[in-house]
Image (cartoon, rainbow, N blue to C red; front, side, top):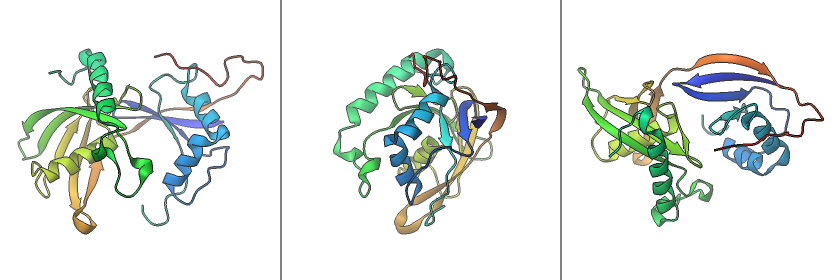
Length: 222
């Protein structure tokens, strides 16, 4: 089984270009839900992301067709344990709140992650500059500035009038990598973030499973 590994702003990511399991659904969201409940897809996730082939913070994805219809703490590595604890505490305090319910898709309800940030002023060319850390899932810390987290910050900062139309958000991560983003107007008053960043390949891997390996599909120690 071949995978391609990247890091995106320091966040490791393992891609399965040709998943050997069927992922049913008409949209990416439906295929995601199917994969979560399918023993074959979930077993493959465990095999590739759990130890000893991965680790507790390993992230990965299956390549699937796109939707047809739509295309007190410092944010520094030395404080990562405290940041994780605070992020998890905030997540579970807010997860059941009515404000965390999605208006049209219940699958997206709840709080998946927490963003903690530092305001760093503005750059010489007028961009808003912030540093953030995103704590998601069960206490995983995103090494990158976080793509979905950056999108959320763009929407929030636009709503609060802290990010002007056409103004760039310079979004740094806890390890010093950087995304930039601007808000474009979407339908019905929505915001469509446009985000730029870096990603570099780190290797290609061919995984095998010994039928006698007692640790298949793997384990996670946190």
